[in-house]
Length: 405
Image 1 (cartoon, rainbow, N blue to C red):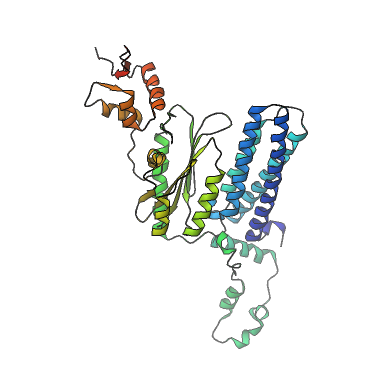
Image 2: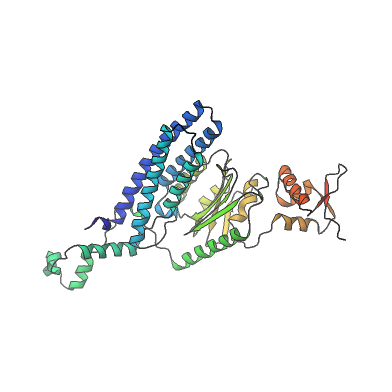
């Protein structure tokens, strides 16, 4: 068998181990870069490198905790799998090589470039191809084509004469039937999803994609106004992510929603690992999707709280989000994971406020929109500048719609 026809299961396992090893080495290199920039008093680069170090730690945790499905492995052909795996290991090697070059360079550390290589590795990780029955069948077929077959079924199965009632074709099928690995390894295979569940998954993510296309977050987890920040989202198989941009090196608010059917014990470990890996200047709104969640899991999530992560569980069977409803952050962000198609932007909420009154205060706007006091002031400054509302002045802190001629 030629090298191109490597066993897809073994290939993915080997590549995963290789990338984990190289990521650990990259982490050590970044640690040295943190020390290097500290000694040179390059504090902005030092802070950014610390964030990258945290991101690498998070990615390592994700790879170890999540199976291939959780990375939204795509369906494809065997050729696609080989290409995806080649990109995966190549991007890992490129990241390590570039990080190493920064150690010996006398130039300032190019942190955005380093972060770009890390993001590229994350993308290729998410685009790996799932090993399913189709790929296994294609692999076996290529094996058969590249190797000499036994001349007869009896040569392949010496006990043919002792197995009455089975024809030659049945024995040939049995001989080339794939035997899955041990139980501990079987989880890397794409699970068989029922048509009804698969349809519900696609419907749900289609709704989110539509919402993300025609709307943008304006209220952050802490009530700050982020409507003018850069908004970017990506849709992949059984996954959608959204990013509210901040500085060139850091995105303050992230949305992640993806199919993640796990039991309660695994969920506990996974969520805690994600929560502890979120950098201190970021916030993650995480939604995990399953056909249904156990009562024990729902009760735990209703009490979950963390300073840098809010957690949602979406049940396809119930078309419902479960989350901590006492959390202010959850209340502000849940609509970005909900299947409800209706969304109102801040100006629409402002118009509703003015239906029953001519004037309003920043506090009233805050209560109507979920903006904090400072967030409401930032939003009002924009509205005044664009002449959507006018400041009544005279120390009243009151606003109104401009009078029409």
